[in-house]
Length: 72
Image (tube, rainbow, N blue to C red; front, top):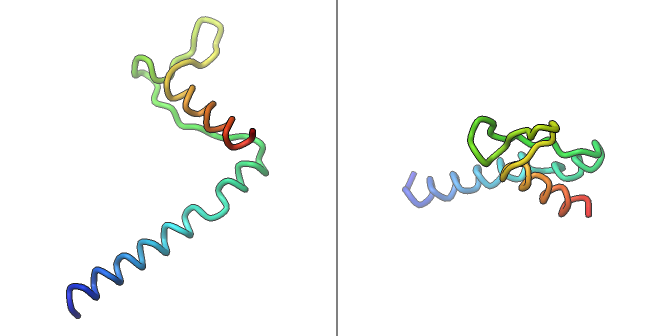
């Protein structure tokens, strides 16, 4: 098999996997009614609970912005 054909088949396979991995994700989040975010705790400024137990930081703010854009 020529190099070009191998590259083309690889790109097609990767593209097909990408579409199946993301299919229905937004619909799943909307039907669940919540977005589950993963944050990095223990890194200053990214995600930490304040004295009241409310989460603050860049990761938390990014998650909230994602929720706002997804749910309006």
